[in-house]
Image (cartoon, rainbow, N blue to C red; front, side):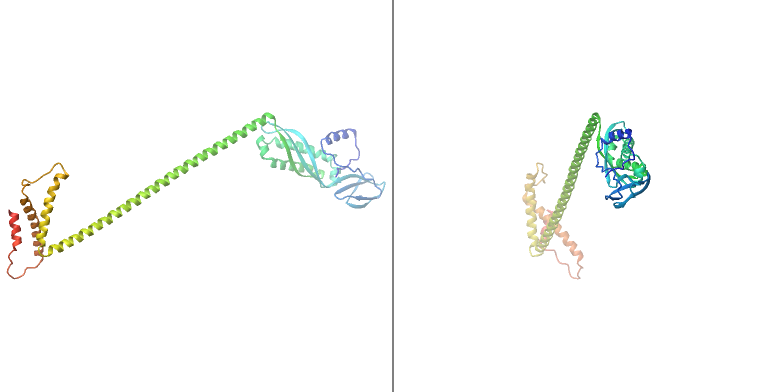
Length: 354
């Protein structure tokens, strides 16, 4: 597609356009068609026709008829999307950094009449508007924000171009920044900043790793102490339960032994056997005193074994007599003659008194 051809070309206009078009890509230009009465307009093109120097109508794609000599095709407008390279230019950011920046502009002719009669050179006008708008938008941003907000920057440039080019019948579809060149010293500073940021992130990650490691170690020690205390508690509980069971077993065994002993004492001559056993234990206890301790307290007649046996038997007889008296008190008295004491009791009383 091509832009509209103007009615006349002056020397100054040709120099201006040739200087600019040397930077822009060249598009094919079929030139203005000659009116032979019957014209075939290609698809996606609009031909602006003037009759006797005044706008007459716009030819639609397909077959069209004109009056020779009176009608003339003055402008040929392409309705396709047009790509224009915006030349590289310098711009100053908010923090006074000079940038070299270029871009690509995408346009489409929406109204062939305004594009033909609204502006002398639509392509040149839109390109200049894009450059000035880009300088204005870059002056509002710092260097760091220019790289972070390229999308918003492109959108702001498109909005500014559309507001100004509405009367030209042209619509800017999108604008894309191609390259941003910064000065070498600024580039070195940015590289140093990036390296410092990476070192900072590495340090932060390392410290976070150390913190997580310390937390994990402390948590492990805490769990180990909890488990150790629970194990100790379970051990103490089991030990106490074992001791309690052992005490119960010993108590039951002792109770059974006492019952057996009581049954043996109740039999005939049981008291005599018990007296003999008590005397043996008494003598055995005195024989072990010298082995268990260096200091021993002994009675005065330790050498008299007969006296010691008699004393042990007297103690046992006294205990037996006391128990028998308690039992006698519990039994109600009978109305018969009192029974004389047995011979064994009399002998035990004589031994006690001696």
